[in-house]
Image 1 (cartoon, rainbow, N blue to C red):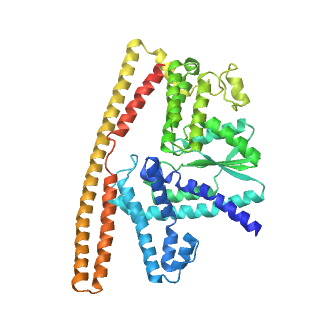
Image 2: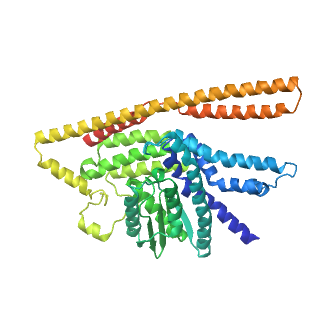
Length: 493
């Protein structure tokens, strides 16, 4: 019994990894960036889609499905046909809700489609999420059991990437681990790593294509196995090795394109920190000790003080701000090490960061080109870039204004439909009352049921339509304008 309890506990502890692996980026891919509260509700909707096969099973064997979800046997007092009707309604409602929400919340990066086409995607997305969840639900506990019997542990490091930044993050992770003594070599990714993402890519490439990499990064070594998912890094090895590798990774990836938090507010802080990293690493010698960058870092620190997130997310951005502060002061990161060939190729002082003094090829080329330009050509080049930036901002404002107007029209249409259906439901309820009082026949029960269902539908449509109301017009345009102004201020430092 103790062995079975240990196995059950191990599988239960894997549930967080299962949900994170499948749903960590699926919500953003399907519905775009959103607030923390909305993201929780959308994550619940995606989780319901993953559990959709249980709803289908409930139609055939309602009592078994009820026991699987509630872990309690269903009372024999409840009629089987009524419970089966509930399962049928839920099995239809989940894909419908996925389709309606997908139609209402189209991400900015998603291709343009009609609302009917986006609603029809609800069925395929539901089936894909359910299949991906089934693969992960089976493989993750199985792999953890294998690691357990081999005396190894699995550690999941949060790290959100997209298709563009995935390869760079993988190479930086391998370089950092190798520099810390974990020699790893890239190998073909196993099926259990690629299957969930490939399934989601198959059912909805427009949404998941921006997040699924072309080639998955999987590394093996004598001490450590490393698997890079779109939303995290899996480290497999001894407890001591995985702990040390975890610390080395989060420090080395502080300036990498990937994000180490999931909360939208914390991710916004991370993006601000990374913009400062990019400015600093273009010319470390010139920006070291910069008063402007230091002032900007203090502003970010004030935002971190009142950041409304959980402690794990908060301490992540706090640590990244500390790392940036060390770099601006010309100090080496605490765990930072570099390989011998890099150390021999690049001269460094005792306080400089090994990676910081290695400018990127693009930055070197840009500075060399700028030095060869005359003052007139340089001013013309800057003017051209500013003109292009203004043109792009105008295009963004125009596109966002059009999207806001479409959202308002969609809100008016759905609210109007809700009002019409609501009036019909009230009429049906009045007819039911009249039948009940005048004739006193069982027919009023049917009328009352129809009216109640119509009322629920009307309330749902009205709620969905109202949620599409634009609360912050031109939000993306205003944010990018602030970022452009801050970028110009940082570069001028």
